[in-house]
Length: 46
Image 1: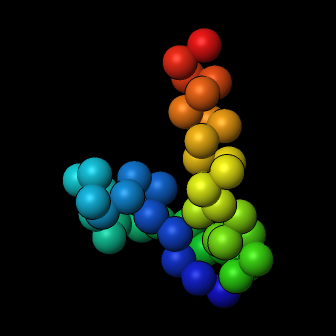
Image 2: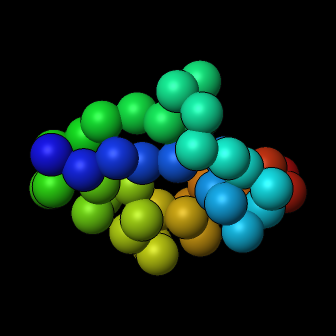
């Protein structure tokens, strides 16, 4: 299990419980998959 920052610390997120979620290692890796991030950004632009 790993903790995941909902609002990334680099973008001003903090370590409060409201900004953290616990994910399985595999799920955490998927959240940070660059291909998924690009797809999400493309969806916002369209």
